[in-house]
Each structure stands twice: as C-alpha cells, then as structure tokens.
Length: 226
Figure (cartoon, rainbow, N blue to C red):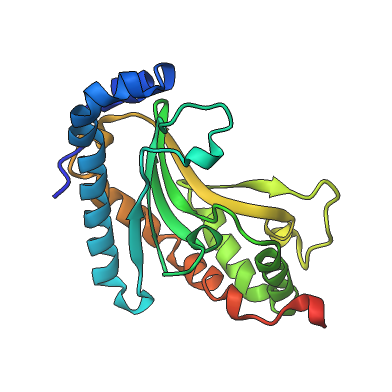
C-alpha cells in the first residue's frame, strides 16, 4: 500500500538530471528502487485497484515507466530518465495512441490527468467528425470541464483555426494532435502522504465521462472515406 514518496526522491531526480551516467546511477540503484520505483509501483497498484473496483466494465490495464531510456532514442541525452510516470488505460497494441489516465513525478513538479501521449491524425479526424455530426454531446462534456478548476486543456492547435460547430467547441476542434487535461503542482505535502491515491482517484472521476467518449473514437468510420 502506498505510504507516500519520501522527500529524498526530489534530490535523487535532480541527481540524475545533472549526473546522467551509468557511473553515477549504478552505485545508487538500490536507493532508486527504494525511494522512487517501489513507491511509484505501490501508487500504481492503489490507483488501479481503486479505479477498476469502481469501474470494472472498462477493462483497464496499468503500467509504470522504466527509468532506462530506449538506447535507440537517446539523441545525445543520458541513459536514464529524471522522471517516472504511470498510466491506466484500456489495453491496446499502441497504448500511447489511446486516452490514458496518468500520474507523473519529475524534479520540479508532479502532474496527473487524462490525455493522449501521441494521438494519431486519424483519431483526431474522427474526433472532429463526431463533433460535426453531434456537437451537443461534446458540448455537454466541454461545459463540465469548464466548470471544474483542477484540470487545464493543453495541446498543440492548428495555426489556421478551423471552423468548429460552436464557439464552445473551438478549443477542442482545433487540437492538432495529442492533448491532455492536466493538473501540475509543485511538490507539496500531499505527495508525501498516503492520501495521494484517494485524491487522484477523486479528481480522475471528474474526467471519466470524457474518457468514455474518447475511448470509443477508434470505432467510428474513417471520415476521409466519405
């Protein structure tokens, strides 16, 4: 059961950022497993259990990122990440293309929310096509998002705005690719507390109707074939 991260994890993450090498990391690997990897996995288990107990119909799976970067994609960076994240989503061959609930811990802050890491162009086309066909459903979801004050919509938009079905849907309709509803906070007392999973689950619940909407997009017809 998650008992909270230790404040020492912040110094460890900064240590990786400024000493990103095998020579620095290997002598501290046990420390990494104790104060970073283990509590992240515990948090993931608590979030997954709490979420799936309440919503068993969604058939969710969970994963925790690895500290090791893909050796094929270092691009001049060191071999280790200075942050970790977890995701809870429906199973898919390419999970990064599906809407996911996530939590991430980095040196400067922590964040959580709902979104896509890499939404495909076809997925976004289906999103816009669905808004064109039936704008009222997404308008209701957009109003609910606008009423809450935890999450903010983030994502790259088209340089030349497209004409949305309504003013309310313009921020959503003009999203170009991956987007998220994200809450980012500086490290605070909640991060060191066993209350963190319950708080995140409570906040995620606000986004569940939107998740259900987004998770069915791939089943829509390809709008390019019309």
